[in-house]
Length: 597
Image (cartoon, rainbow, N blue to C red; front, side, top):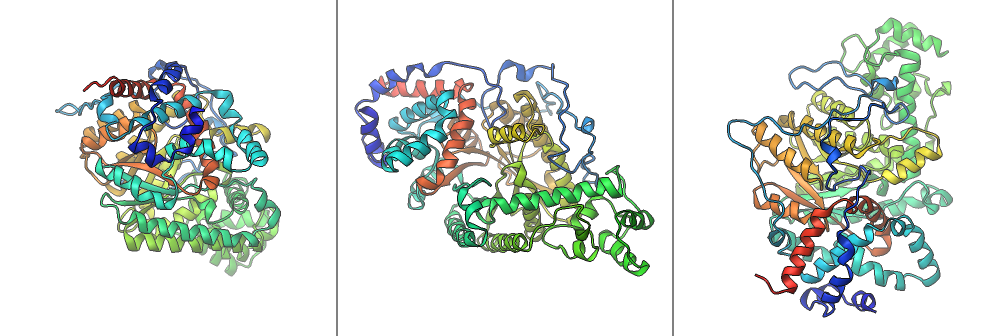
């Protein structure tokens, strides 16, 4: 009965007139404060004591089937030939343990108090505190979260949308999203008052298994992608009005359909493997014109000497008389595939070449991305390209790099996202740092722990592939901290968003900024947390001069349900282990209910 009453009450009425049953709700939720342990490397969460242990597992993950590039350490002083990820999985080293302390300069690093519950939640209404506790409690019920997608699907099929949405809207939807587009100004104004910016995100999500995509054909979905583009363009206009800096997140799966992105990713991976199998087994070395010609002969491709000279010149991007792995992959990219067919590699059958329909679809996706990037540049709004599942990520990375090479010359406008729960994420960052130096552009990256762990592990198991994710949360934490430090050490040509709910990682980042002489109010380093989570981190950082953004999803409830399910799945692991925030919520709720000052 209580939940039915809450479900029927719109958010604004609850804000102005909190329910009279708050005390009863609070007592019913008193079981929230059970602290459990977690082994998930999801984004955020307080850490078990093992996080600080030097005893790390030694098993080396096999990453051959997931990525393609292994890099030497990035040096801003000297650009070395770019090297590739080795196909020898033994070379994929685990991240070294995060140090328990950092080297301090002459003055001590700032020590921030993240546990002032009154300060952390001063902008929250009493109802919002209760709702947060309720949502976090549901997220910690493992069986409920595991079956949530099925429960929602079945309930919508049997009962329609009205009844399920009566529960979802006042809880998960209003806690983790800003609502519909017309609700955005209300949320953005509240964030602006506490000095926190917003990263807007139209949160509709799709995967390769979406029935409409596999059944209806690619052409029938082009209209939907165009509609998504218009929604993003409108979001950019809204974001541009922020005095704290406009930022808009985009998902490439909303601009080009996942089944096409997966096919393109398969092609790009095939191109990378072809280099190792037919040209240079040691991806850290290049080849001269003679070895290049011999490789074509072995593939059964015969060219005249004049034609081979032209091909070698086309592949030799930096004109140093040698072709390396990066020359090869940048020549056989999907957006400029003339060399692929001119060289007759496509006719060998050694790699799966995209169909004409897929080429058309990816070119349409790039056209939409260019339109969005042009509008963002015009209105001075940063674009954050979200990471998605690994089986689509190569295509997403490629389109992002195309945009960065066009837009990041004078300022960091286009950001890529790096999921640090992936075993090869640090090597990928090293690679992109070197690419940015080669092209004379800003490196711009958002670092997260990861958002698709359940899907990735499930898919790897079904296909009998090694998981691309670090096996323990300790590995993920250490890798995340190393990646943050790597970018900070190259901050002169970089811009970094530290998207984390993890307190130790946040404190290490602050210490590293102090150690490297990076000021708190720099526009090169920002911190980010999800709307509805870790307000104690966001507000404390903002009050101490750091640039902070909340990730603000919005959209119709029916379209953002996949996002809400994923949020609940992530938070199931996070919330079972994050006792501090829940305890602070309780302290503030009890203070208000008991009338304390």
